[in-house]
Length: 268
Ligand SMILES: Nc1nc2c(ncn2[C@@H]2O[C@H](COP(=O)(O)OP(=O)(O)O)[C@@H](O)[C@H]2O)c(=O)[nH]1
Ligand SMILES: [Mg+2]
Image (cartoon, rainbow, N blue to C red; front, side, top):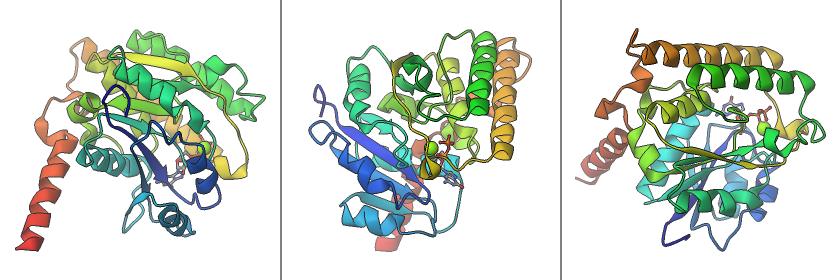
């Protein structure tokens, strides 16, 4: 709890068996109320380790992708009554000890979303971030800031915190199930006028912490550019993209109602 607000950490997991225990050990137990892991049908021992650690575990019956995983993470965090949700990769890439600081920025009421920025830390390359990823990151971020009218140091970190209000309001069901989900979500925060803060965060690159290939990074980069251009055209009132829709059916609440109904019909 922070300022009377329930803090839930969500871990979108895929083949995280080797790094999960180290990650969880460093999550601050004094401020975090619950840790929830969603396994995206990994073929390693992720679920076994998670259960041994006493996490709340959800398993996808099939592989849905990184965005699909986060849709489940946030839906289940809302169901648990989270006021603040921190998304942390279970690959031990980001420092879990910053969870309290990030959650506190949300608890203050000043920010709706907070990003753990590897660029503000300025040691990303020393931490082993591949040069091409660093250059992609800087170029994409510069073009996004221009198109969105924002001033973030990076849009591509996987370490984020959100208020309940953000998770209830954004049309997250309209987003991709792939990696570009992350970027659509931040662009939606901008479109819905949620305030975004940043905190510096060190990063570590080692084989288990980074599996995305060059090809998938390029696909992600193109998706990012498409999302930012879509935002600009939407601002100019030239299009009405579904990712900026205010349709209630595209909010996570719909999933909650649906699964509550199906639980009910299973009971009866
Ligand atoms: N659900 C799902 N998650 C994935 C997949 N591939 C990677 N991930 C997760 O996506 C996140 C980012 O991937 P990662 O390889 O660490 O990327 P990098 O650190 O940016 O190079 C990690 O939490 C991975 O567990 C996948 O095929 N499905
Ligand atoms: Mg990683």
